[in-house]
Length: 211
Image (tube, rainbow, N blue to C red):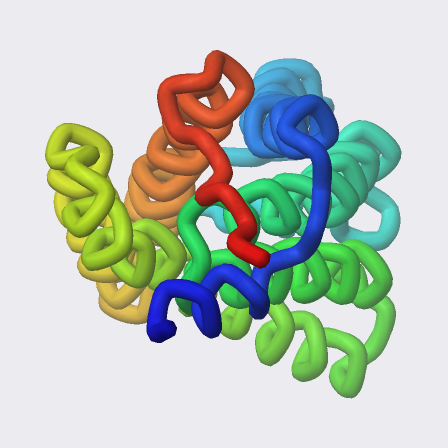
């Protein structure tokens, strides 16, 4: 009975649709990481990937703004798509934080730095929400993954979530902001891409819906 109630709360996507949706968890992180890597290398502005935040690449007036904004949008659109697959396969709250990360990232792209002090404030709020939900996603999936016997992915989730959370907290300190921001975001993105590939490859499968 309990299993029937749990399965009824999951969407009725077909297995093939779930696999296709999961690919968003690969495309989104690849677009985001690729944008800040290339943007950092080609910008004509004085910019340090170690000291400066990623969002500076999308600031008003930055020559790298179109590229970095595209990376934000790609990540923001793909994460909720991936979240629909995560909801069907894993369940729990991890899909909610994954979707929230995407929505927060779209909000970040819509509030670029250096437009006004008010916009800068909102940018910080949306970025903070995105960081927290991203770091929480692999951690929130751990219990369900362990129950399903996927210990490797669950363990990776603990490591990725811990690295992400600690690193993102350190971005508020006097330590190099850009370095720890990239470390924290990349750690969580690696887990997302790994879980997405597992779903797309059939290693993580939707729980059959009982009738």
